[in-house]
Amino acid sequence: MQPTRTRFKLLRLMFALSIITYIDRVCISTAAPHIREALGLTPTQMGWVFSAFTIAYAVFEIPSGWLGDTLGPRKVLARIVLWWSAFTMATGGVWNYVSLLIARFLFGAGEAGAFPNMSRSLSRWFPLHERGTAHGVIFTGSRLGGAVTPLLVGTMITRAGWRQAFWTFGILGIVWCIFWWKWFRDDPAKHPSVNAEELRAIQAGGHERNTRLTRDTLLSPRLLWIGLMYFCYGYCLYFYLTWLPTYLRDGRGFSNYGTNVVHTVILLSAAGASILGGRLTDYLTRRYGLRIGRAIGVAAMPISAIALCVAALTQSATVAAVAMTLAAGAEDLCLSPSWAMCHDIGGDAAGTVTAVMNTYGNIGGALSPLVVGYALDWWGSWSIPLLIAAGVAVLGGLFTLLVDTRPEAV
Image (tube, rainbow, N blue to C red; front, side):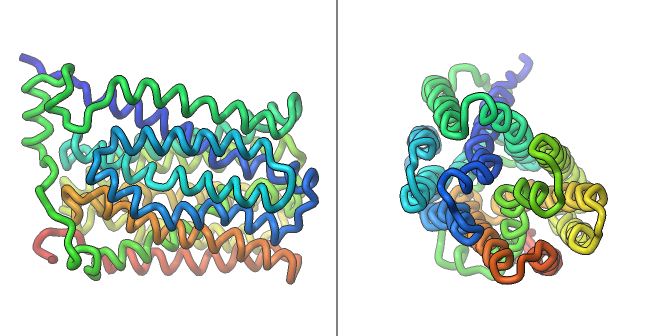
């Protein structure tokens, strides 16, 4: 009997959710210039709006990841998607700075735990040697979602206004949730479409270890290095997700349409790098083991830093755009290996461990928009925040060098 391939249907469902997640998340950055004009916001105020989402995301990330380990991702993801869809729509109804802050904070609180619970789903349905590629697929979806958003939202804003864009995109998550609840099961053995051969392939290929979450796991140096590495990753990432359109338009002189096109190209480079990083970590792990297989960031993060320095120092808008494309792509080579690390050390507690790592990333992501906003208000310079991001990226490479997820390294 041939094994079924139901786990790849799950991967397609996760891919779709990942696209929706980043459409809702990146929509605010594309609409930011219009929101600032409509509500009369300063750069610092807009920085706090961007960070309100990420602060809430960081605060609620670990509880939501833990709930996924405890209640199962089917229930928890359904709650997460319904909540964030509601507050995506609420963003379109704001009337001043305070209401926008509240809407974005509650949006972040709702979306917290989305990727840890998606990752938790994959950990039960995919064997060890397929997880890097599986994560690469879902994170490629996130970058594709982000990539289509500038042109999609830009067109909608031109025709209907920025408020209508948020109302429309909120509906997508509700539709996805209906399909999720009807189809998914936390345990693949209980899914009617999974036959015995596929179940054996999942388990024989390295099914989740029955690892209990302990104080030692949460306080281990390995998780600390992973967290600090992801802090650096998140710090750099959130520039692309928040301030990049404003940088391209105001700092480099691109038109509204040109800004949307360049923003799309930059996020598409990250999408390609995400799937490449997933395949590369699986290949290197099979060939050289976990120590080498998960260490892509040792080289990729410094490469990203060099590209950020070029973008900061060049006088050419075209060179800056190319450099930002390289910087975003190099950084996203690290994405799938980072999440696979959490499965290496987390076992059945992978939802919580990924949430811990992602909390570090979102703390970095919360700081990044604020640093940019204050730098613009204080110095009126785009070079300073980009050079700071480059330094953070170098630190990310150094922290990756310290990570060793091999079982014998415990």
